[in-house]
Image (cartoon, rainbow, N blue to C red):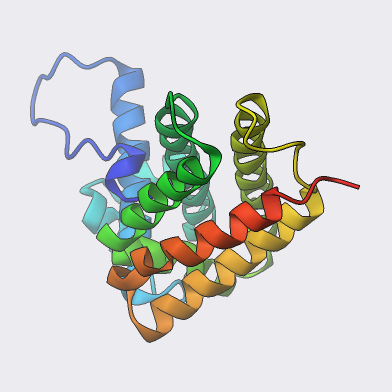
Length: 218
């Protein structure tokens, strides 16, 4: 999941550009979402201001307030957009693979995801550390994201059942426990080693996910 993943298109050209109103608004929205992740990852959620966001996005303050009610709303939107983009790419890349067993499919998923985070340390910190500092306003977003990742893992497991690598779908509650452990280990790595070390977690995450997926729902 990276800043680039959410589709930051860069500043709009000056003068007449031939873009529709919808294209202009989409560009501004994406740039503001990318900018808030960058700012929060670098400065921390509490210290980030609207001025920090609009400066990075190269968008006027009045445009910001035409799109978002404030910093909290912008950060929540960026969180949802970044996670959605990452999951979409994972689904397109991983679930469509042919001739790949379940364990390799899981490993590839973690390689892609942790590779995104490693390339964007600011966004990784914003999404895994600063979301906890953002207060209760982001609780519902975190819960929804947790559900979306659980749905993705279950979808990969369903492919494993289809291909005969798994005898049955895993216990959804154990998948929830897996995701909680992943969040904890990602945050610990960010605090102790930095984002560049996140790909080192691929073998551990793969072993754990395969073990849990091999435990059918009771």
